[in-house]
Length: 168
Image (cartoon, rainbow, N blue to C red; front, side):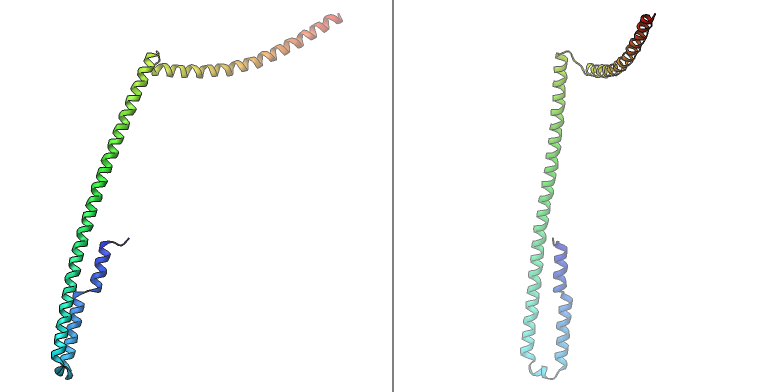
């Protein structure tokens, strides 16, 4: 995207008042030094004056257009800033509403939990109980394996005792 400054620089470069004025003056001096200039001085001088006037008119138009462009640019920039501020305000309002809704929902949930006799501490206790029960299950499963081993040992000892009794 081309910025306003770049456009200004380009226009100034193309229509440098000093450069064009110097060029016209240089041409005047060269023409005055030449002898044929004296013969055609009047029509050339008129034409030169016309060119100078056209240059001044063009320069005025450029300045007017530049001022108009600056004015439009500044108005567009200010309207964008206003819209940005409005959007930021709207976002803040939405965040505030969302926080209020979150708090009201949490309050309603707490009220419902109290109505059912549950509290947040009760929830924590039930979670702890669940953890303890899972631990107990793990320990009971270990006990079952150990009881199975002991029953196998007992069965083996019973077999050996019964086989000894039979032999006696």
